[in-house]
Length: 232
Image 1 (cartoon, rainbow, N blue to C red):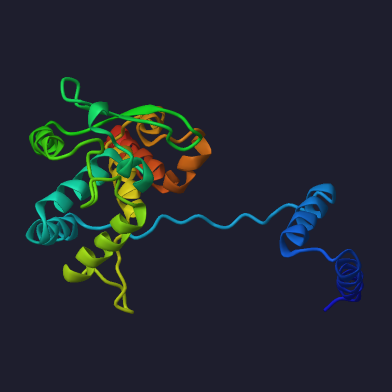
Image 2: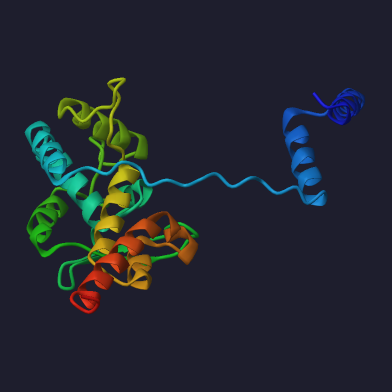
């Protein structure tokens, strides 16, 4: 340990004891010191998680359907809308527009409302699910809003039953993976990023930087199409 660091530790320890600072006080002090000293937090490399193949997705949904068709529908809506799990559990029956095939997501990230579309083929099962619900599209057995944790645990259970596990036997599937899955598919299908952002609820283009490799691959494919036979 550098001598300068040792001096800082000794000084902080003495002041903490003298002032009888709590754990929260100490954390607040560290934040203020970092801000005033202009110490920047190092940026962690963001990597896109391993996505599921079409066959793996099919296996997952088939397994979910065998356990409970309601859960299969929940997972299909999660995938189709690219919602965050807390947004999914907050979907109200009154916010589903069957005429335009879209759902109003209330108070999403940043406390913003937005509309997300859903596929026409999900219209009938969603309508049937609405008939079984009081307020929320997906409710717990007690008729209340389903917890995010409940969705996460059930998703992991289905994934394990479907054999979608890592080397340690843990689930490869989690709610946010489905969000990545759909955003990736939309970008690969060359939907403009600004339209993807309207659906996903991202506020800044920087949020899509994790998908830059897709844009590079699309640009490469376009280049090959344009230049085919031009340089021969």
